[in-house]
Length: 442
Ligand code: SAH
Ligand code: SF4
Ligand code: F3S
Image (cartoon, rainbow, N blue to C red; front, side, top):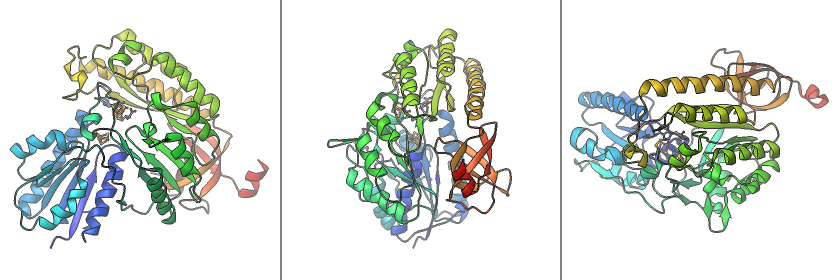
């Protein structure tokens, strides 16, 4: 009876991967995907609760769906993902037009819900979090592409005091190496050349006696996997064993995401980040020593409750020491239910804004400095898409995760090509394709 679904996804790559899982389930039920939400029988939104802004975007989308439903009352609206838990009561009380609310561990219920929808008129709500659900036997429906997201663990037990994820996603649990390997093999056979292993805390992966380095090595040994990335790691779980595995496999990208959050020890402690700024900088140095030319990115939160000007400046100080290749920067956003929501020394918006601008400015300088180091190198670039600025140029990434723009020549998307880096501008590199023969000489 129902024929098509529309799904949109907010938040991190875990949500992107979960949406692919959901699409797999919907397609098994005979539904087909549509790009136009107005035409869809089912509209799903996979939500994110990480910052207030992310939630606001979803609220405004719900308004749009409501307007569609007023025109087409049979439309079924489903809210999935990290806001489900938190929104449950609000939806039941204030948004009766939402038919389905499912948290991240409840997607197996979807087929049954869809089948029964014909008879049901009540809202269906399930936001229970599981200690075990890893969707091991379910294969996602991936759109044809370059990179396959493979979720290897779910949940987070770290409880950083600012963060909602342990509440929205529940406890840490990992899939078996065997089932991950079989999913990777399937993705390779479907033509994906890059594999990104995913988890809220990807490197605290643990299944039986197997830790993250063992899994990473097993994935690297699979024939046909050309590039492997992983995200998002926690500094606490990065060790020499992991770096040695990375150093000894060319297919594992020379890139580490190392979220700093803050550069002052009192604030780090208050955030429950479990490392000191000294430990963090030593770790960054060790990474650079073991993995020459590595790309290191970070996450930084400015204006955490109680952060003084001097403490904030220590964040700039760590940035100066490490010189990250890139950074995701955020103003602290209060998340109800977290430990930090109980603090009382919040900073005014203007202070957070100024600090954010300072961090962004410094990072731009460092990105350019790091990128200038690549000029005159020949880098292997995976051709990923057309450049946004020019239809005669490709955009692709180096294994250190830097975007390179270059003239298309005769190469195609998914090719690995040698590119001579000629300039660093803004946050990207620019280059020229090198003919294979020349590349060998260089
Ligand atoms: N597990 C990952 C982070 C996932 S959330 C890790 O530990 O690195 C991605 C980033 O969002 C975090 O690293 C943090 O910088 C930011 N973030 C999380 N909660 C936030 C909040 N309440 N306000 C502002 N930024 C936040
Ligand atoms: Fe959030 Fe911290 Fe867990 Fe990352 S490690 S998801 S920041 S609680
Ligand atoms: Fe957002 Fe949930 Fe990811 S809160 S960042 S979608 S884990």
